[in-house]
Image (tube, rainbow, N blue to C red):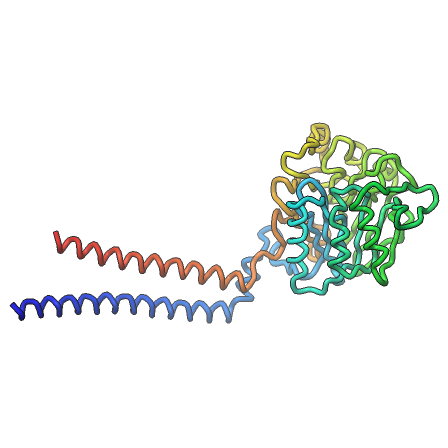
Length: 383
């Protein structure tokens, strides 16, 4: 009897040892695979990153050298960030001051400057509406701003009004913005105007085509219509400029590959004559999902659809942040756009995380299968 019990104990111990051995074998195999993966990524990671980031249409492109522009997804508002090829950067507007928009905007900026000096070479408010300037006071708190471009409107409670320009005193965001801007040390302040000097840098030029007047009835028309040119490719930026401002530039504005549509795709902007003068291939629209203004408007949609040059209309409401990229390799070819992501999509860190996440998942599944298999064997023997 004792001998029979001993045999059972011995068999049980052998089975447990076998299971433990199987578990150890699995662990050792995965450790070896993990070590091999680490070595392969360490040795060939850079080549792998370049391969994964390869653009199918244009071949291997170095996205670290060139000009990039992000139309940031800030809902029903607008904010545009531009990284210039000489290391300088520009922010145009800052979205609305609502909890969701402010979070989106701040998250974008803080992520962009996680490993960079918090210096903003150019900061522009196009016009005094909160959906464009709601977070401008925070911008001056976060950055050292070197040059500030502002609309020709003033806040008489904190500054003198120049000439017959409009006095905007009833908007809290604008008052706070002006206070922060005036308090910024060593910051040059320039009023948006057709008379502004071009911003010129390494193979790029930023030209103002409006405003052509010192005073407008509608705030939107204080928005400058501008063209950013780099290696022959041109991007037209319009803020909330409406038909009146568009008419002022018809004789001078050049054709542009990209048009950032005025006033979130409203019917009052992007008229037929302006579209025919710009002849854009890509039209970008910063607009919020289900907004109460009905943007983009039906007439805008019809005009864009009827424009022969337009190949693609991109909406932040549909695809999130829109990133555009130009460099010397693309000169005379096209502008690359990326929907909802930065141009450099894959990094060494993301490869490590992805590879080990997959390996860890497969390991857990294998351990689970071993346990299930062991339990099934026990049930079969009992039955």
